[in-house]
Amino acid sequence: MGLTSKSTGLSLLKNKYDTVKEEKDMIVIALAGNPNTGKSTLFNTLTGLNQHTGNWPGKTVSNAKGTFKYKDKEFLLVDLPGTYSLLANSVEEEIARDFICFGNPDITIVITDATCLERNLNLVLQVMEITDRVIVCLNLMDEAKRKGISIDIEKLENRLGVPVIPTVARDNKGIDKLLETIYQMINGNIKANPYRLKYSDEIESIVEEIEPILAETLGAKYNTRWLALRLIDGDKAISNSIDNILKKYSD
Image 1 (cartoon, one colour):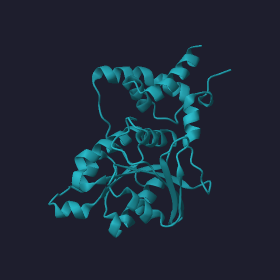
Image 2: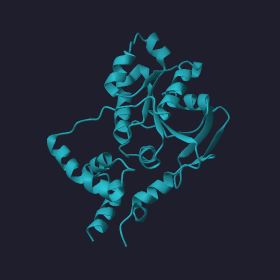
Image 3: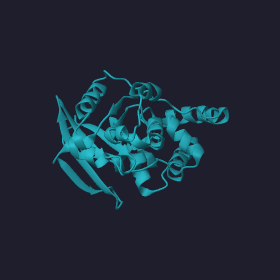
């Protein structure tokens, strides 16, 4: 019997984080961000009363999903737990990381606090390592202005390689531009080219060796570079799944 991703822990993860869509063609958007960035406000602004709450499978962490329509598209917005990173040091970080990787959202919005952008960019860079389809929402622009903080949006966008949308979610400012950016990205009119961290030659060399094996085993559906980096990093949950694959692969 040949090895397929269905026989591995990765398939179980995918099933765990699969989203239930009301319509087959519904577009799934993950909403990630640090705590206290206005993430819940943005979620409520976009989805209104069309929300469902519960818990993530097997966890006590709350799970909020909501729907909205823009032009001819239907969207399902998944509000991920507020986290500072995706290094899976907590249940919240594990959920956010696994949903972005294995739930395969069509777009991931990372909402950031414009008053402390440097700290928030840590999560942005980590998300961009997993997926190309990222939009950065630069929220709380009014508070940044009050504090005398000026941000060169165009330069930031060019450096990150993804759309950056300034907003004040509680006042509904910038939401129209955010919606249009989502729509244009889904239609292929905006193509992101996320900045990716370059690691040492030694690590990059190991990644080059591992990636083709993962790609041949898993196919093109998963980000094999990110999985290879997690394997090198000693991520226990991910490495257990990959270990199982490689053992079967060598049989």
